[in-house]
Length: 347
Image (tube, rainbow, N blue to C red):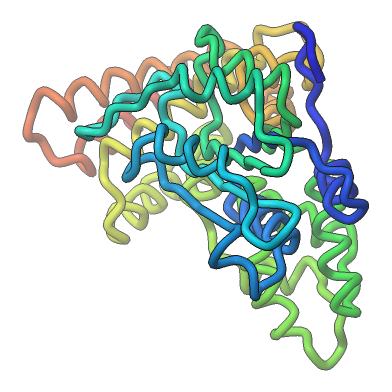
């Protein structure tokens, strides 16, 4: 595992390490999906027998305890056993984030440990972040010398595999259309997908078959999905429906600025996808967004001109400026935006 090349391992690789006992001294897990984080954590917990966990298992939240304490623990030899597992959560010092904390982390302690780890200790570092500061020495070192498992930007294939595995293990069947609708409605969040599958399997308990109609009826719409519907109405000229959707979102307690941030962000993505000649994978990598978002954006931009997309985007940017600088009613501002956008489309 030494060298300058980052070699990302798969979930199957990590599970195989645990099952065969061929464990590496340090594992570095990056990603925000709570379902996958819990899955990996539970797997590492199986290394230590429940009766021995009080002595040979330690978990440290680095927003609450200093790094030096965790490293000292990792250096300790196992008590009445062959191995110790030390789990480090929330290593925010690997990102560019600033924490309001009086804790002082001596990151060089971790750097030194990575270079010379305790052979009987398995250190597992969970970094629940989509972005890390790769300029930092400690981040580079972890990616190069630990077993690095990344859940950032799971592919469609990965997500479909997890769905199939969960459904098959439960003795159910889900068709392709239902899977794609489930992924779309949850914005590709595996954590939410698994939560919604629990509801869907309970709902279809008698027939044990999940169809697209079941998904549409039961799955909770995310803000991203509602935003997608709103944008679809705008671009298709269904402006009354767009106004009604906007009112509905605000009536549920959605903050106007958060809503507009999401709208502008999605239109920005549509414009970037429209103007790019790269593949879906290439665009996703360049923009650091999930490939599924790019796939959906590709479907949309084929139908509409760059001018129409840009007109909506610039109108929303102007509206956001008014939201921030005046006390005018958001619903009135949106209706004024719609009127202006309608006139631009008619030109």
